[in-house]
Length: 271
Ligand code: ATP
Image 1 (cartoon, protein in one colour):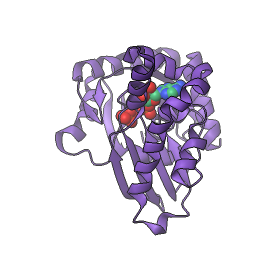
Image 2 (cartoon, protein in one colour):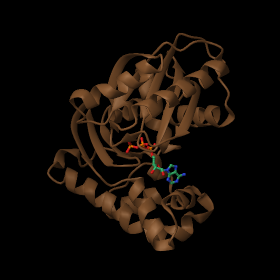
Image 3 (cartoon, helix red, strand yellow):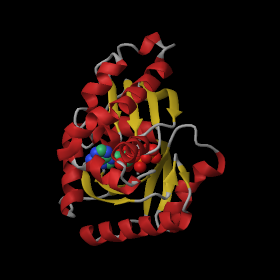
């Protein structure tokens, strides 16, 4: 299966709450994000078998801020997927944003261990995204809830990373201010695809800021000029995001299907 086909398939499995009829052994990945928690199971070839997603604010910029809440959600996702697949999930991989160190770096492993999944591997989130996209050479821009992060991969190795605090949360804050609605209402508005054309002029300055952040991060690195650029993370769901980001960035970027699911799929591939 091609990379984009795998992402489409994972989305379908999550949406329908079903499992693909593929033989084990299986790999498990858990992505603890600022805005959501995603558990994914793949077969040994990295083909999606099942998955589950829960919107939740248990992590902030890679730091687990609600340990019990995070553990409970992972327990619930694990139970859901086990029920769909009819098996027990006992071990799996997690990921952290690059630059997360010390106890913070260990927290994700503790969360999944607390939920009954033995942590066998912890990868950098952009490395996981690159694995799901099947790229060895390239720039992964990850725009999640809290941050805009970039990772440059050369021959499959992470050679440069940077992270700055502007993400989907900021888009929702701007919408909340502009339309005089609560943050929660702004989140709903932002995810309503029928409203994307209307809200684009309001959120465009934030997208341009994200592109400028990435441009500045790469300013000193001429050698990465011809690397393909992929934008992943939930914020890239906004209709027209890729075009507007490319314009402000000055380079064409690729937005994979279901950009929110790219990193979770890649994490499972390490499981
Ligand atoms: P981080 O990487 O910062 O830890 P995360 O892993 O939770 O956060 P993602 O799951 O990649 O980040 O993306 C979450 C963000 O994507 C949230 O701000 C959410 O509001 C936004 N988002 C999710 N779905 C959509 C959508 N359909 N349209 C626009 N934005 C969306």
